[in-house]
Length: 93
Image 1: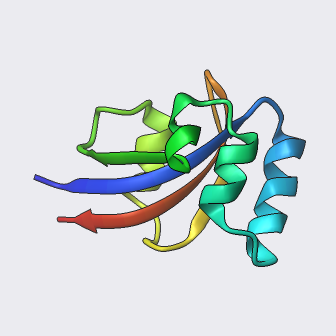
Image 2: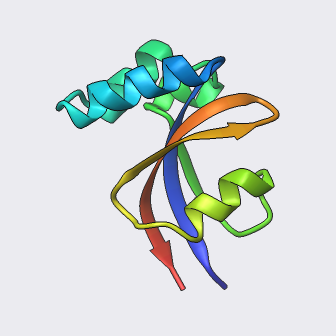
């Protein structure tokens, strides 16, 4: 079964999400940005969500984690919780 590991940053607005993505693309550490800005409890672990299978996360999140490139920061991704930046850290098919 396909499994993936990812970390994310959750913020309330698309503008916040885009600004944080620029910071990360400019060299800021993803985990540090997550600890400082993410509104998810995973922020304490630098946004780390651990390993999961398709269907364990909301649909919009799954589509990115199981369909986009590993090792890149994707987003903003809008879900019912807010706006996410997602970095896929690994995926096994």
